[in-house]
Image (cartoon, rainbow, N blue to C red):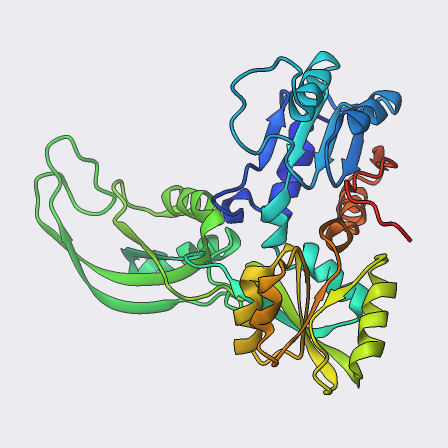
Length: 365
């Protein structure tokens, strides 16, 4: 195996296309073609984590947070970021960060929080815009069925619980090739009319390359006419945060204690109690204050997230119970999530959960 094998699999689970624009995801340090010895999975990459990778003979660190976030203009060892990168390079250890690509995945960070809180009937809290594209192409009637199947096999035509979705209309196409053309039907420099089917399918944008490859490989024409449109439709499974339901409504204080125990946090900061039961719950791992309004609009009873500032607690407006459980605490189970997926795919290879606690915040009992 090579480092690239692990990267390719991770990017089928959490395509980097869906990472937030501000983020820095992907392979940050190292050569993807390097033979793989071992993989260390961590929430953050620090010097101590690189040292653990060295001790375990791992030459790839899969990290949730990126160690390089802004641009590095020098590598002098003057900051913890520079020292971490230098140590990784000196010991030929690659660093891969998945961060908001995993945040926006339906099986990712927020799904794991929902697992911990036993929330069912899940949906995305903040669907990401412009994630769906539409392909339109024109093909002779006799080739339409075969081309559709190839497009479906490449990932087109999936809408929620339905597969192989398309819309097809019949019409007349015309063309005339020049002297250098090699038309599949007709002859060069001869005007030709051909009965054609207009095929329209949608697909998630990260599949554009594979969809076009299927189109060009299996379309019979020498020159393929096609159009791609970016749609406003929201993808049901791509976006930040999740909404789910408790099986049985809970009183507010028992709910907060339940969250504290299940999320293994030393402290839960919360807004004023509202005297109502909690059942519809929103969650968002990491800094989630910007989504308070969306939680209220969705009719949620409670919102579990982190990094809420003093004045942001007022945004609850007496309509929502806010629970700030801490940034690290909201994302701490991400390591296990990645380990489970990677060991399921590569069952005979060595994947390790980092023992290093990278939480920079400590609590005084």
